Image 1 (cartoon, rainbow, N blue to C red):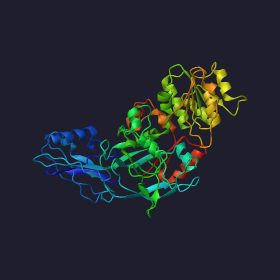
Image 2: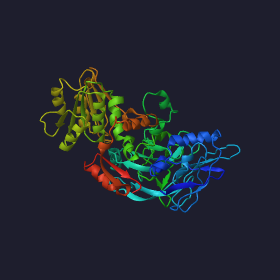
Image 3: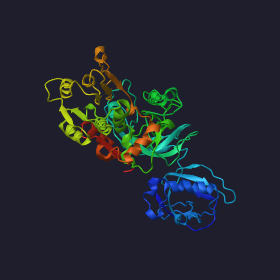
Length: 492
């Protein structure tokens, strides 16, 4: 990304250009920074004619193009220098005699050419077949259609769900495909009719969908949206049933959960994109795109863990540890972690485990061990593995009357669970839910704020960092259970 300080000369001008995104401002010396609130305030004051003059400036020597920028000469003389971005920007046009503003989108590449409405060539990790390494190659990304946005992905992490689909465990595998669904980025451009987002917004792609208009959104019975229900089993966009990705020779590449974040640019429905605090670090909040939010939400929103309660968590990967963190924050008095990897059991204590069980080292069913430890069972249990035997054990480890068991693991399509109905007769609850019960656009901004105020700790989930080009190394780390979350940086 090219940027420089734009120095103004105090001359009248007709154009007011380039509202500067905060990721660019953060790289500019403090004395020249302009907070987002000030930029919004300035635009409002311009509309009310509080400023009388603005000035043209030249981009610094590091860029070959000339860009007009502005400075206020009345009430904000200290704003004479601004960072000007040629990657993401907004143009606001004004005339001195009668203020008129236009909201034209303007996004430019490093050579100064606009990308709005254009096909973008970028790097992506493409899956051509199950159980094969991803192909890191150039792809073409079409402009967003009506109701869609195109996002520049800045950071992404690798989730077990990505691995599940890449291994071909789903019922109807779709290839070639760009997977990835746990990321954060910046809106590059928006399609016709998009009102909730604009270029430069910091966002978390939200695979669960949240349009607020469909039958399921209006019913309010769950967090499921019709956009999600389409995207979950489809590799095409909901608007025209076509893809926005193609190979360089024009062959379609299919989408994943409607967001496909293993690409430097991705097109998604407006309903699948949550605007968040621009001050939040994208390399941390990308984790809220799936695993951490799923675990914490399962404790807070689905099970509704109460203070003083007992809990058993089966499987201590990222989702399981997030469940532990959520239960601890909810005030659970005893949290038992079950796994077969000693290192994970030890790590779980840092997240809030009070007891651990290595299921390889016991001589009786784990549900019996838990029952003996807790006088008949825990009040809440969570399956975070996705195997039928573990799901059953988790259910049977809860109190017969009033226990709650939550299924979080994603089981293989041919792995079926069987149980006798009397298991639920006395009032056990067996439940599940996607994304911890959260709605993307509605709830993700609040989760980001909980990270910002310290309620949620995202840092301790990140065990590895890699450039996007080494994504296959990250997948191997996850396969070998050597990482919790590997965060990839797309500009490296």
